Image 1 (tube, rainbow over the protein chains, first blue to last red):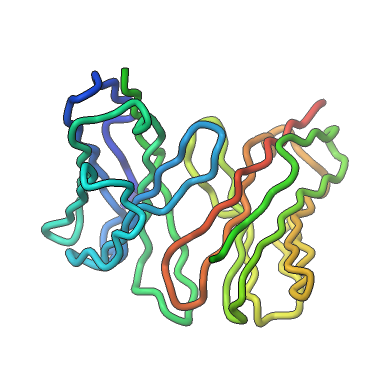
Image 2 (tube, helix red, strand yellow; image 1 turned 90 degrees about the vertical axis):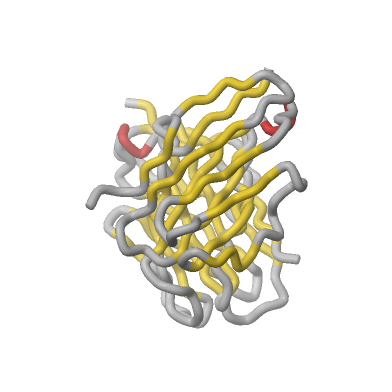
Length: 117
Length: 114
């Protein structure tokens, strides 16, 4: 149906609080990505799912960051004990098939702006 | 490691004129993709144009075209007949041919004046 959706659009958390950010990919898309975009910067890769399998989590900045996609559709990015440096826009993207030699466009959601006070 | 550099934090152009945004990248790979994304204030990344490294011909999409210089590792975006709606952040991005990660530059803010 519609594009990638993310919720909430804005989240304010007190330092030390846990947060959960949700991503609804385009229906039927196999691949799902999370990126972190700090103010004035380009997005940086966090993690990648192929269906429910998390194949790459090399970009997660610390063990306080955890992502899941249990049924291969909706994904949740959880940040425990938030710190001020976690303040950023968190972007989710999905693509139709598995990558490889052929190009698969990533479609982005509007992001969640997280502010940690 | 692959890196993407955008040396122009801000650019401005008058409506109907042409503007070129610069991007350089560093890689030791021979097979990869390059992209330009537009990010308006709504924050949603929109793909503008893509280029496969193995193609010598420069990609074109309507008013948008690229100048891909593989040996120089340069990938600039030319916007012709600029419109007010082109005002946004533009990000150059690199994708290794057999992976799914996108590596982005720091962006160029484009302003369009009437």
